[in-house]
Image (cartoon, rainbow, N blue to C red):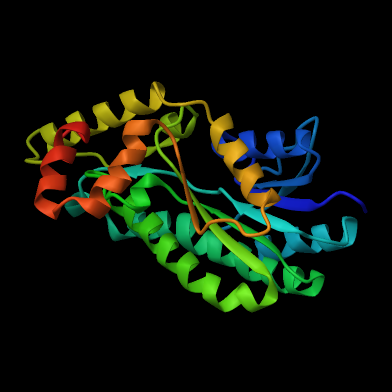
Amino acid sequence: MNKSVILVTGASAGIGRKCATHLASAGWTVIGASRRGTSSDSWRGVPMDVDRDRSVERAFEIVDAEYGQLNAVLACAGWGLAGAAERTSLEDAKAQFETNFWGAVRVVNATLPRLRERGGGHVVLMSSIAGILGIPYQAFYSASKFALEGYAESLAYEVAPFNVHVTLVEPGNFKTDFTAARRKVELSVNDPYRGACEKAITVMERDEVNGADPVDVARAVEKILRSKNPPRRVSVGKFDERMGIMGKRLLPFRLFERAAMSSLGV
């Protein structure tokens, strides 16, 4: 097989689908993994539920049997959970981590032996600006992405001797079906968090609906995959959102928080 092969999780919708389609047009052989095993005109779909060990194993067995190689993985599978942290059940919070964090870990663990066998490759993990900046009323979504950031940074040291490159992509607000699919924690009419929560989510959804084109993320991923020495982190999005990352790193914390509050709807 002449073309490089990449497995993209979360390929049935949103940023994952846009990346799968763009990479196929750029010459990659794309295997799009999703719960439904959705396919496209330009890439093959395989069923994979990243929450379940055996489902991930079966998908990689298909990759081995039908493609015989794997050069890269792009882990996009994930979903959003919004609501007051105190009111979020541990069951919902754990489910958020099961997909967004542990799902990525399962896929990476299955990928690494295959990349080592081929002498190297790329692991690209879809993080978020919410993995750098804590987002109010998205505490467990942010926490899952913060966890992914720490995991990837640590992993990168371990796999570097095998010529495996690990990169985090940190999108801001993009216009996708992620917004409509977000799960929300219900609050009672008299809940003290209700007003602030509704306001913050309204601001968040407005920014997403008016967000950038997800093809920008796909192009950033393509650039990473073409690089022999890709960066550890790549932020993608509108200028003011990306400046928020810089502001957190450079400004005194209290000053940064005051500047961020209005933009975050609190």
